[in-house]
Length: 175
Ligand code: SF4
Image 1 (tube, rainbow, N blue to C red):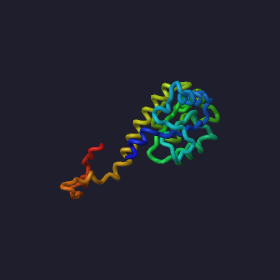
Image 2: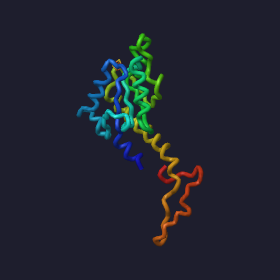
Image 3: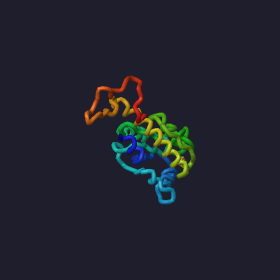
């Protein structure tokens, strides 16, 4: 049931792991009325425990890596990670610097890579749309084990649950 609503109102947690702020400014532009990212129901929240999408900018630095992992682990499943900007994907212009450890996928799994220096609002919107598709798939996979019964049938006002159990491998109509 939550699948439908989660896709319509995903909450985003934005974290700057060490960026130059270029991509962060593009995020603000995407939220402004011209691009209006919020038309997808997106809300930029500061609480990892209520977030569905982890939007990270900047490469992993020695000072940010622990916080990056901490925030990721605090987010409930299902969650999707977007790496926004070339330096978030691979280290970009900061690669091989003494205080930088390349892209964020060295520490947390990334679902959507959005390259670009800076990544434009259009690319961010494409990335969020892709992330919503992945979020729906992950939600489906999580909900599946709990859906053990089909809708009970009803005949002459009598509810019949005898044939409502799903067989192993059988697909529910909602799938
Ligand atoms: S990708 Fe470029 S513009 Fe974006 S945070 Fe990294 S260095 Fe800055």
